[in-house]
Length: 67
Image (tube, rainbow, N blue to C red; front, side):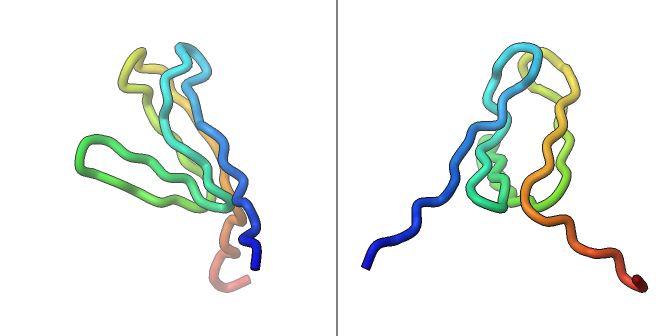
């Protein structure tokens, strides 16, 4: 039985090219030192190298409650 390969793409700073995270399918993996965070939906981050703001949206954004 073959596993379906997941879509893997790096998330890099638009200004300096530093690696900010890795999109794996519908989730974004962000690691720094001992911290590891998995995110679905929109994410904003300040680049640790150059200080520029970056934004990415991964996967489906959950519907708001009450709709």
